[in-house]
Length: 240
Image (cartoon, rainbow, N blue to C red; front, side, top):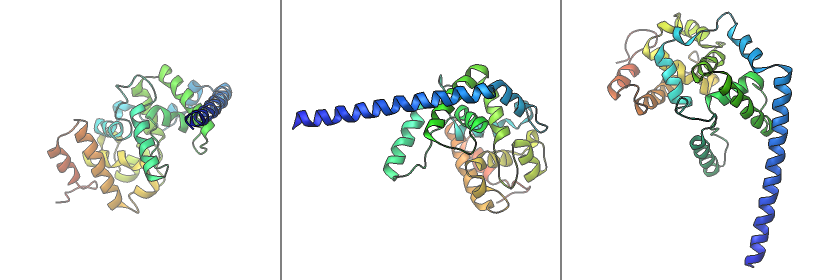
């Protein structure tokens, strides 16, 4: 019986190994094809040359801190584009909830997806996304990749990129956003259609609170500052 079980496991392992190798091969070929057609440098330059592209120095620093704390807390400390802890956490949650609710993608991976595969998810393209993200990481600094990310994100209500969002929602430059505005906008891209301010301010406020917790955990702000920011009305005034 033990010998039979070992053989079954060996067969399963072999199938998984062969299947995984084939998937990596297909993903690598996909990666080579898309970058041969349009190089990463060319695609990135097309984004950076857009009229409303905004550099990091022209964005409220707390907004950038909030994006990192919420989307990719180890962006600057990790040596690879993958976050193995986040992947493990996502795997466990997806198994226990019988869903695909958690993705575990890092900001470099999300930028790679947005550059080449914004509306098409397959396992093969997920592998290709990894290779593109690895190239991005070699060609650009993490700060530059973060800059691309916030300029490519959709923030709901028809606002693409941080400049359109800050003007569209609050009529201010990205650098002039208040603390409350910056933290709220940082949380919207997780689900723009749900958190957009025109239809779900209450939900966006709850999401803002989550982002504030992440900032406190990261040591960016204190608990007292988080409470103060939460009580600020993003349209001016105070919620207290």
